[in-house]
Length: 406
Ligand code: PMP
Image (cartoon, rainbow, N blue to C red; front, top):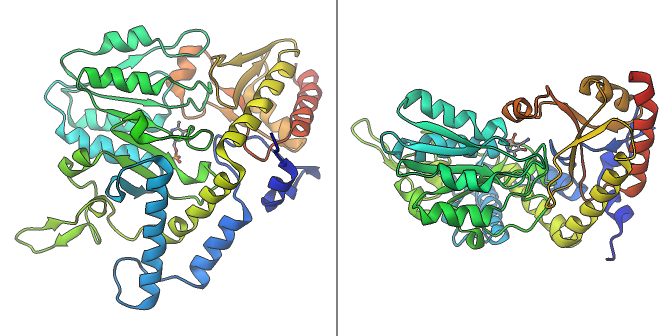
């Protein structure tokens, strides 16, 4: 593979920063990735050259801004293999997209309906369903467990389906364990029982090619900021047949066809779900992030990250007392770990002093922490611009801080 990581790094100005006088080693990509200059330039151009509210004006600027936003929608449609722009709704991120589905699609659930989640979900794919449940106490939430490697128990998943099951919602890739779930088979099984599926793709879309038509999922959600794009925007893909039936999530400008005090009608898809002024500057810049991924090649990025994962894990396993949480054979480049009885916060704080930025804590997955019997982990995660030398520096930093904290 012809993979010039140094050339890639040059596109990310932040990577030349220093932390505590040491070169920045950014290993918190699961929380958010860094942003290439091309995306930042597009954001600046959005303010310098195109700023006018979208879908509202006949004037040139507004039309240009609208065209940028709708060009992004077409790009996202093609990028994820959706069949129409009507199926691509812009949101604030994964979290808002799941809240939208839970609130709107959830309002159509039958009495006594059951929602299947998994124990490895991010809070964003738990709490919106609980909020729905607080309004609809007749609904039940059923939870799929994991095995010791951090893989879903698929037999249990299948056994949870019954005549009341009305929804299954699970992550494509776990943000803690890195497990890549067999979502295609899980979706096919749910469909064989007539159950629609939402896939939380926040940790998948930045690291693998995703085709929603091939997966045949009913909803797929993700955030731009984890895939080299701007913050504050995300995507809800939904099958048109569902989006048409769903009531609006929020009311306001842009989502209406006609408003009167007697009766209001709603705009066509996807605008019915896009109340208010969107982050059109961010949306307009998002295609530059997709360009970056396309230029480097998603397969190349995946192979590069996988190489870093294997190398880092093999070096980490040499460290006495190392426990890695998540050992599925099909795993994304996320390593959650603890060493001996060192607290994850202490480890994170000392690693930071050496320029190594890792995440510590429960990673918004408290039920999973409870399942693992721990309060949190240290988590290192890789992206297209990380290097083998950074892994070496990370391991050297671990070897320095462990004796201090033990
Ligand atoms: N789901 C998963 C699997 C995630 O990793 C995250 C972000 N950590 C989210 C949902 C929430 O994403 P956002 O904060 O961008 O809405």
